[in-house]
Image 1 (cartoon, rainbow over the protein chains, first blue to last red):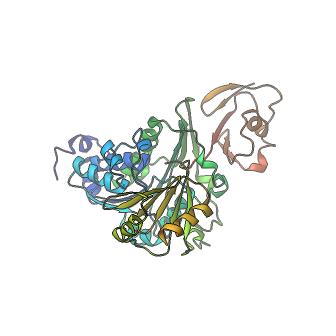
Image 2 (cartoon, helix red, strand yellow; image 1 turned 90 degrees about the vertical axis):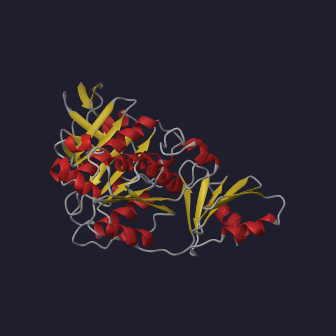
Image 3 (cartoon, rainbow over the protein chains, first blue to last red; image 1 turned 60 degrees about the horizontal axis):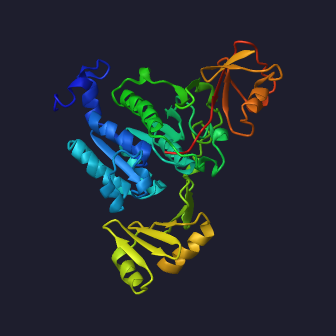
Length: 340
Length: 67
């Protein structure tokens, strides 16, 4: 072990040499490499977690730079997938951490391969569909996961422990209806750091064998309004929960293989995920070049083109983002027109 | 009457009699909220029965999705 690198962390008594060795042997999955994911990935990389897996479906855009700390203007100009740009930066920060970057949706087949190998999942997603999927897969493989979310100057976080705390499905009645989380109310960067402080501290406790120090509480705060709230969450556990009780059936793992569409929060963008799992970007580019009206951009990970008032970004895994609409039907039509 | 909501003191008028009244006063009606009243988590149907008294502590948490 490079004792000098982690010296101050080892000096911190609850971690010590033993805790640091545990960290180095740990594998953490971070789902989402946006604001929360960038920040917790950097913190865990600096802390010396042995193996990190990052999953993200998006690429770097200008409006991300205000709060997504791993990304640079060059990443934005090259439209780098966030997972790839994050891995690049994290490897500069700590070359001893093994980092796997996955450009794609955190969908069930990918999670099934990774989650059994991990010690912990950190939620850095921006939607409840993925969170509910994470919840059930974490319950199935008995892994802890740490919910975190932010909007405006408000943040909320909770650590879900299998068999011990309520799970997200227990709290399902409190999940806002679809779309209600897409408020265009913006976000300030410090609230990201505050949620990540909670999430990463809980992660360090779990990974270093300090479970007794976990908060056990649902924590929320509004930095602008100077509000801070903690609720003892144990009473919210449901004895008949379909995801974590004895009668569990994991409703959120029910697999749907059709073309899936999702409206991305506050982005005027629809994602389409077809059944096929691969797109030959060069082949598609050749085809599109025949149409002189189309403006093309390509990097090794994605192909972006503009047509009418839309911009379409196609990834190697076959997914496409259609920018310029929130209408799922319209997005499907554009997809089929240009990508078959 | 003075109560504490999310750690901050709040002066409310007499017509705010119970938790439901407080939710309306704070213009949070219709939102899915987790509410703790004097360290007791309330079910939605209890909001109208939970009478507020001077010095009460109320914690209100809502979920958001952004990341």
